[in-house]
Image (cartoon, rainbow, N blue to C red):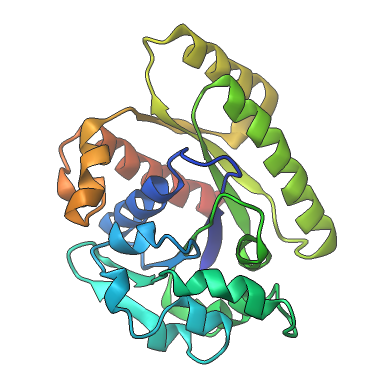
Length: 256
């Protein structure tokens, strides 16, 4: 059965999409079957996986409105090694259309259930706001992976996200929990980042992943080539860190 994880943080610009596509590529590299679901109308995870969001015949929008299945909407780019249910601007309209529909917060969960046996991991790239789209992601997931920079404002956003997860856990999805916090764009030369990193480990203990993703130019360049950094430059420090993170994720799942 597939393990379903949201990559979420209510603060924008913290590397959610970078984490999603590189973790997916890393997991594929270590032999896992992976599906990425792009729940952000900007469609960055779609483009970052080498799929043209403007040319999608079926997208996650159709899946949420139940006019297409995961099997019909998914795309495959053999270069990256995983499947993608893509998103584009159409998805912004789904917010309004879902409001009056039955099971509006559980539509994605039902769709993923139909493809459960075909994947080891399903990774959901959530938008930064707490919207009906994010809620569909959280209601579908076994857990949340939180990418965060080791900066003061990131800690502020983290407390909001923890409260949101608690509310969804209590009212909508009793399976939901924080799987772990991933420190991204980390620069060990900056004292504040080291201090925040230590605060995180003190407060959250083993919920903080051992792997740290360094600030890395090659990871930043990769999306302009339509590839995850793990594929674009496998020898870069960022790519190697994400493959190590994928291995750590597989290890954690085995213990769950």
